[in-house]
Amino acid sequence: MRRSELLLLINTLETPMLDLQQRSIEIIRAGQFDGAYAACLSFSQYGYCWLRDGTWIAYGMDAAGQIESARAFHQWAAHTLSRYGDKVDHLLEKMRRGEALDERDYLPTRFELDGRIGEADWPEFQLDGYGTWLWGLVQFVRAHDDFALWQAARPAVALTTRYLAALWQFPSYDCWEEFRHQIHPATLSAIYGGLRTVESIAPEMIPSGLPDAIQHFVMEKAIAPEGHFMKFLGNPAVDSSLLWIALPYQLVPLNDPRYQATVAKIEQDIHCPSGGLYRYRDDTYYGGGEWLLLTLWLAWIHYEMGRINPARELVAWVEAQASPSGEMPEQVAGHLLAPEYHDPWVKRWGTSASPLLWSHGMYLVLKSLLKD
Image 1 (tube, one colour):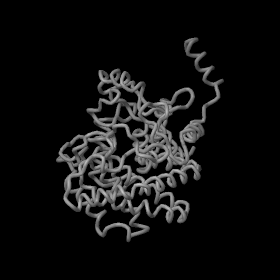
Image 2 (cartoon, helix red, strand yellow; image 1 turned 45 degrees about the vertical axis):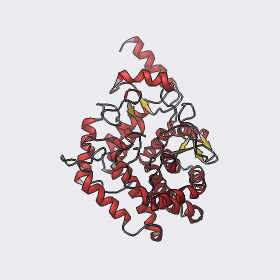
Image 3 (cartoon, helix red, strand yellow; image 1 turned 135 degrees about the vertical axis):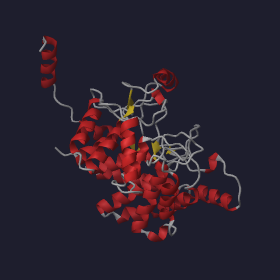
Image 4 (cartoon, helix red, strand yellow; image 1 turned 45 degrees about the horizontal axis):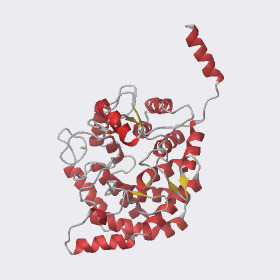
């Protein structure tokens, strides 16, 4: 061993190991305001609360024993959504009259931290976050037998289910806030998962047969000729968000052959060897880096399938991407898919988001499962 390597090893042994679980909790708590989780306060575009991100951050905090933080998010979400009943009524009335909808008619994908709808231009019409919140709320209520929260949230749940029932077949932006005019299986799986979980505890709130209709639609229209789920209808490529179809939303079981084919193609096409997952092959956002939260999702799938060592290896890779102070970014730029796009994004919005609370939330989920 060379002297420089020996000194590095000694310094490493003498340096106290950072507790990334505890650090994740601290970072998330620092980004929570009256229940709302700011996606990333240090990034110019992410000082808002997304229902999608927020639900998974809350899920991670709950898994880490931070129950009150998770409950506060669900309270905030329910209170926020209940403010926009008139907006949903207006949208539904326009649909009843056969009038064309304007982009401003839809509920937003992100909210100001005080629950207001922001004024900045953004690709707002996304539906997956609303299904995700329904799913996450029911998980929390069941885990803690918290039917006081459920009763308080019922008006927001009713509003959300009406909204999703009316719009689920509409083209919308995907979870990456792209491809506005497409229909996305990952979005449909989140809607399905949310409606199905609500139906399991309050069947009267869900139109009869609606979850089954969504499931049938996906299975009929969203399978590529090769036998895997497709990125969006008409595009046979894969996207890492397709992992959500079975875990957690259970549109199909984990062992479904079409889902297993999807996971295999994701690992083949968009998993960097010895690294993390990309969003999709043609990604150019900040050059198309490896995303920590998606890598953790693949680790979760390995865990649920009983493949513990591969799960641990992916989690270890994620841990290695944290900064010396324990901050986990949205993505890393070591092996970019489209490096020529990286600098233009930095010039536009600054360096990519870090710490991303969703990355920390998913890390807490996996560490709660992979107990040493």
